[in-house]
Image 1 (cartoon, rainbow, N blue to C red):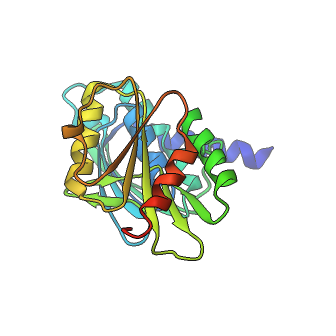
Image 2: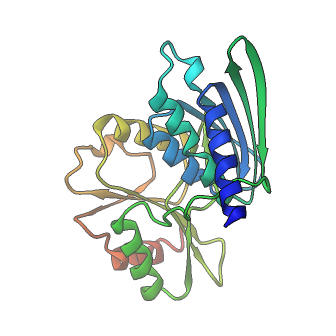
Length: 245
C-alpha cells in the first residue's frame, strides 16, 4: 500500500513538471505505436523518427511552447507517462519552465512511476476479429500484430499487421485496415503510404470511405470490406500471389 502510494505520488510530480514543459523528447523501444496513437488522440503535436530495431524517437511540444499555455494540453501530456512503463526501454527528457528558471526533467525505464493499465492490443473490433479469423484459418502463417515501423520520408508508418509464412519467411505481407477516419486523416495516411512505396502491401478499405483507386499507393492490393474484413479473401490473395511475392 505504501509502495503504491509512493509510485502514484512520483507520477503526480512528473505530470506536474510536464504540464510546464516547452519540449518533451522520448526515445523508446517497443510500444511506440501505442504512445504515438495516444498522443494523436489527445491532439498533442508529435513528431516521430525511427531508431534502431523497433525503436522510435518522439518530440512533443509542451504547453509552454504554445501561444497560450493550456491546462488541458499539460494534462494530456502527463497521461502519456504511465503508458511508457509498457515499453521495453525508454528515456524521457523534458525542458520545463518554473517561474524564471528552466529545469530539465529526466525519466527512464525502472524509475518508480506508477504504470497505467496495459494498452489495448487492438485499435478496433474489426482488427481484433481479423486477427482471430486469420489465425484460425491459416495455421501456416504468423499474424504479427504491430510489426516494425516503416520510414516514409520524415514520417513513420505503423502497419496494423504483418503476415509471414512460417516455412517461407520471404513470403511476407503488410496489412493495413482503414476504417472510419476523418477525410483529412485518410488523405494523409494514403499519401504517406504512397511515399513509402512498400512492396507486398494489402489495404483493407471500408466500403463507405470515399477514396478512389487513384488515391491508393501504387502496387498495393486493395480489398474492400463491410463491417468485417474477410480473412479468407486475404488468405486467397496472398496464396495466389505467392509466385510474385
